Amino acid sequence: MNISEKFFEAASMLPPFVNSLRSVPPDIAASACEIRLRTGRPVIVETPSRRHTCTGTSVTADNISACVKHFCGYSLYSAERELSEGRITLRGGHRAGLVGTAVTHGDRVTAMKDISSVNLRIAAEHKGIAEKLVSLAALESGMKGLVLLGPPLSAKTTMLRDCARIISSFAKTVIIDETGEIAAMYRGVPQNDIGVNCDVLDMFPKKEGIMRAVRLMSPEYLICDEVMSEYEELAECAGRGVKLILSVHCGSMAEAAQNSAVRALTDSGAVNYAALLSGGGDIGRVKGLWRVNGSEDIGSCGSGNDLYRGRSRVLVGAQTAVQNVTLGA
Image 1 (cartoon, rainbow, N blue to C red):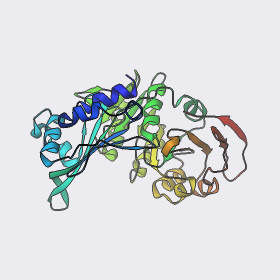
Image 2 (image 1 turned 45 degrees about the horizontal axis):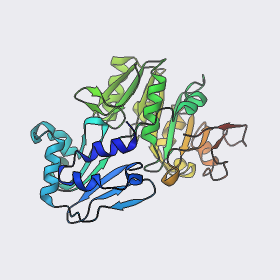
Image 3 (image 1 turned 90 degrees about the vertical axis):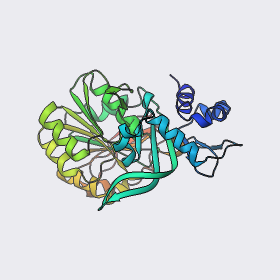
Image 4 (image 1 turned 90 degrees about the horizontal axis):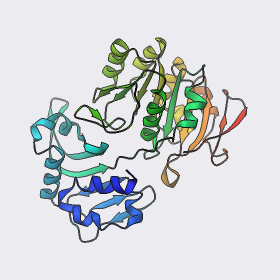
């Protein structure tokens, strides 16, 4: 299924706006990554480089309520946990992000009411995007862990998914899929191709999922998206011989040097490779691949602005380039 087909599949999950979304220009449909609904405002279709307004549309609270009911299979009770967390994985691997008014119990959000915005993220698989990255980093005998760095919408999750697909062809792989975006499990079946030898802990909090994976599934590789405070569990996982492939939100190597999760992972030795991905109109391109020994070394790698387009400089610590290798999505 190509991106246009994925767009129209996602559009069918927004019943009040199906007809309006069918009239979206073909070039927008072919590159769409999000459909946005906001009460009192028009429907917006986002691409990596453009924003398209669906003229003649105005989203009402009833429209959003109808969409949410459709997401839940018209059983809000069955999706109570997902609704409280503001994310629902849909057939085909699409994901709806919801925001509104929190209902709290103590310091915990237990439900959400008056949903005012929906962000329907359109699933996209780009098989082969990670092949060179895997061959250059994950297949290295000295690799303990690889962290993918990039700003929002830089294809980190897409890259992780393809890493899982490739690696699980030769090694036992486990995905900790807290947000349901990598494998997109729907009624126990992955909607995305994650390979033949891959297990998924779906919607598990990362800390719990990491330790369960190590205890129960004996993985050789563990894949985890959007690492924040789980570095102690990941370091313990690496100490048991499991290779890690992770992602962290960072716009540059300089930002990575200031990121507490990246610093902890590299200082502990759980991660010794870092790849920086491009965002915006250059989404999914690998700007640089570095072999690192700690946070001080990450800081010395710079922002990646000196790298050749479509090529990557592999750095050892604070040294100069030792190898140029062709990368790219």
